[in-house]
Length: 409
Length: 192
Image 1 (cartoon, rainbow over the protein chains, first blue to last red):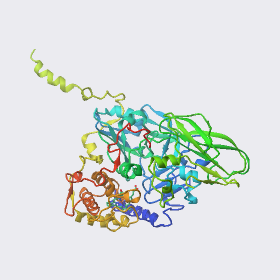
Image 2 (image 1 turned 90 degrees about the vertical axis):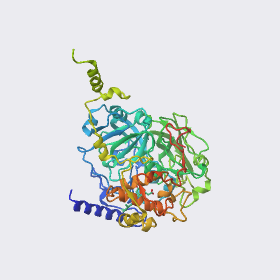
Image 3 (image 1 turned 60 degrees about the horizontal axis):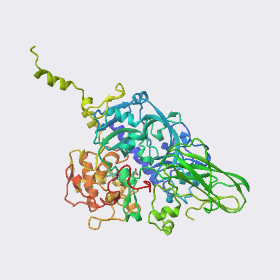
Image 4 (image 1 turned 60 degrees about the vertical axis):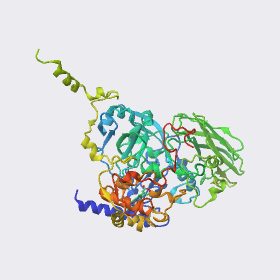
């Protein structure tokens, strides 16, 4: 490539990135930044935020039914201010390190191997974090979207990573993998070999179509039930090793200091706990009048299937079982509904779920206690950092039918 | 017969395919995929583990790092890595470094990293964002020396190279739980 050209491109990119920073007023770049253009031609939409260090799309949980998130509405958290342009003809996935037969696979190779299609949720480790509650940025969508919308659920098609690892011949002393993406920043993440052999997919399809660029076109890892950074997008190199490789992402970015650990940081969280949220009615929406209301939402767990969902309409004093709709799948969103009649009085509605490991979704009070914190800590500014946040979400319905987020109220 | 066993045996051993000697099971789909040579792997493997075994040869000083930083990094991370547009990379000063707690943005930058290799690996692969991978190994060693010095982790005259860098003991080395990540996790429920 002509070096002048590449330098100029680099310069332009850097300038654009800085313009994003300099745009001030938060960092949100509203409207038509070049990288907001969608591959499939859809215009930039509500629920997207672009910053120099991140691009984020929030799934409009309030607007869809069932459990499958349409691909263009799938959440995205990209550690970059632009998408990589990868030629699928040129793209190769390599498996090397502690293997007997280092191998490289083309897209055609991957599609030639036995395939699977499985429905799984993905979730950002920072989804629902306390810091996002209380934001009132209108471009981010309704609260349930920007507070909890960094989770989505799709049918992922591809080849099991265990098939590829078997072809390469993993050596007996190996115990971890480290994966690297083909994006500019070469995003990296570590994964235990045991999980890789269990159910990890090298996915080339999402909901029946090729992956979209935001989701890692042409291929990504899908690590079911685990924090989504492990599901490395644009995956290009997988190195088999004998210890956790301590990449910047997991050691630094995805660890969190906790008072119950004497200020030490919890890291390598792996799987998500049980979690659910009522998506309708939810904050920002309105109940038009008294009478029948269908309460609906999503429940999921990294441990497997959701075995029970309960709903309370009296602020948590009493709970009744909600209906779980088929299909109820392991490590996938489960749709639930609950029939309710609103009497026009103030009410607080919330859901909680139980997973196949018998774990129950915790309340904010339980999480606070577990993390060695004090209720008053949640009133601090800025709010304490918390990840893997799965507290029960209460929504308050006022007499006029308007709904608000009262988790920290 | 003139051809004795003495000649045949070594030839027979050499003919045993590698896959048979290896412990891993044989390939199920041997027609799919392309073998990688050692040279292929060398050409793309930039993944540096916590022991620093894969670090390329090179070296850099704090002074050289100051120069690289001013030219390539300061525009975003601020003069001397402080008060920039994004992530401060230096908190405190060599004489009065920051050593926790790390509840908020204090955790940005090398004072928080458990291993020195994280700084090298991340800067080498991802920085500067406009042209990642454009720094020569010597430049990376130099900026790492510069950042470690200003965070009070090494001395002003220490040189960072492939031998010295992995030996740097990070101040927050024991700041993580569990001390050694294991899977499956020992604590239940694992997500707490």
